[in-house]
Image (cartoon, rainbow, N blue to C red):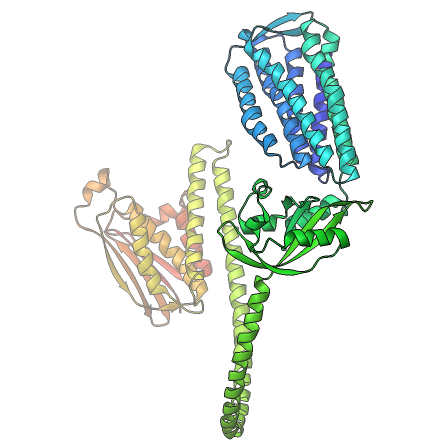
Length: 617
């Protein structure tokens, strides 16, 4: 591993640690996110420089070089943006330079490294295990890169210098001085190691560029952490005043010119911060002639009178305010400027008018009250007695109703919880069956049987859900269920559609347990009839020349319920089919009838199939 790769690897490790630390552990540091973005960009650059130097393949090298170059081209601009953000500058010239100079230059440089042929702007030589990158000095792109680096360095110095000049606190001045010193000293060193040393093949000096970058950014980081604001710092107080107070605040210099204001004033009058400095008092206030005298008095005595004036917004609307003036001084008592505080008087005026209206309404209400009192007194005693009687009756009725509702709610909640758990358990069983059916160790035939088993379980789940979703569970109209389910199963049936249904179903009520068991048996038997009674192909299909009919009957006979499902199809041998392992549905029907319904199942298979189910009422 050559020195380029070693130093780049060290730099990448340090910078990714800085990114993580700034994002998660040092959030209160000034401009932490912007500085983390700079560190992340340098991390990308260092990582791909490392990858460039450990590969011998030119194609890989060119890809790594393009990515590292895009990251490197953005570092100067990001540092300028970082200094601009940390200085909180509102200089319109700085904003326009960033917007119309630095961003287009970065776009051009990205075009150079992403689109252009690298050999037209750089010369790449691999000697002694080191990739050397020699710029084509005649290329305009090389000149643009040099100019961009120098311009960003000088521009950063201008931003920091202005910040230091306008700093309001000792902390800001020290921080600005530190940045000014670091940029002024280390930028020329980095430029020498990156451009000059690599051009004259001083490999070790050129390879130290990442270390100087690490040192530079490390010094930035040290200053940010050392001078981070405390909870009671002037910056926090400025934030509370400028961004949180709902009064209108204007800051003037010692000559009485407008310097800045809080956000609430800008939002209320509808202008931008840079436009405010161009305004005069006659554009902001309807009575601006006395402000000079007020400032003079405040300068001489430190006090001022309070005036009722109107603040004028950009729509020429007037906002009533109470205006007062404060003299702003430094720590040594020297005047720095003035602060005009305008209390919004609109709410007070509205409250005053509201008080007047309320007093008027109160007088009217007092008169009405006296008239009503004389009228009400005549009926009070009678109403009181009736009211006491009604109150007792209502209280007793409410108590009974609340008790009934409470008991009912508990039972409903319990039933819903049981239903929900049963449904979830069935869904888990279906999911397990499907997982087993798709397992690589399961053969195709077994998978088909498992899928059939899953369908049976799903059918049981559907019947269970139909009944438990009904509003009344004590007695269920089973005849209605049979009619509805017959139509649904026929609509889902994909086989023979030329089937007639004859229904003889009485509206009998069953309890929930019998309804679920009988419903599962009915769904299984009707599904088998639809599926197997009337084949559409083969030898058996040719024998069926008569109309295809399925009859369903449900009625009460003596002390029993009777369910009959018959068809005139090909018939079924119950004794042979029930013993087959694949007859899952028939096994299910047999078990439910015998063990759950305690009933009898009779199957006749002459001229079709007739299944008769009888169980006790």
